[in-house]
Image (cartoon, rainbow, N blue to C red; front, top):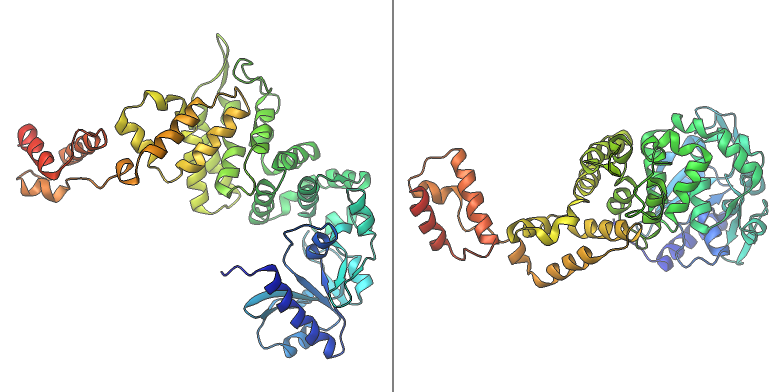
Length: 441
């Protein structure tokens, strides 16, 4: 999908607003875009439009529309190739399933604002007059750094049990405090997250991990009781002591939070989830002998990571990549002792760049020794792509032409030859053929 600039999006949205206004309807920009405008955020959220035009009217006014939630007053209007949610001002009636109202009543902007989640998201904006329309004191709460539910906090959370997660995401992203009544209602509603689809939970946590202050999100999830419901494997890291000579930062939970805080801005989902889950194998593998040990925690953690992400219905490619990264994160301690062929195989894996970043934050959040990190960086700089993973000099077809019969021996021969090639002991197909004739001919 094409990425459109902020100016292109605003221009297309303005066309929709103009069309609605010219036909006698009220139309305003709503939600996150207005919040980001008030907060002077450089990167703004997608533009949503709110209007007193009915869904049927909206569909009739625009040539390209999609009725994604017509019963709730939401129509997607495609303008200049860009999709915009255009929602009719409404009031929600009743609570159906912890996400949808029983019914909606079309109304005006002031009433519509009262059914939204938090005050910082409840404002409207008129781009023609550059007026912020604020019926919920959103600007005041923003100036005081507060996340406050609109109206009655318990009611707001019962309407959609994803809202506690959203409150935490916004609080962490902006380093805001959750207002006391909202926080208490959020904690009381924590078990309601069990009724939310895994896909929605994954999406919300994924946003938390990739935005600023991911460590604050996870800390608030723990303190609210939500973490025990959505990621009990991470919650169980709390209080798991570690050997202080390697982990002066504290227990495994403290280590994980610190690692999350050290990730680069806007990390990929793969890196973010790998950092979060890289040590979840420690609680079940903890033992005390000469010191606290977590033998094979990377193997156990890889299996657990696979199950966690499968439970959350994460994309399959993400599940495999994160599990691989967790499995391999302890191998970095051995890189200086690896044979050249082993090292090249290690560096040729598709997740190596993100694994190296995981290793960096893992070290900086514990003992601080980055010698292996810089060793790998130097090797990656020295090796050309062709050197790290060159095409094999021989194939099974070549072995057949030499008169060898296909079988398990083929794999051994080709593997040994490829290792020699990676060790820079073999440089041509002719050399490889001569070795095969001498050793296996």
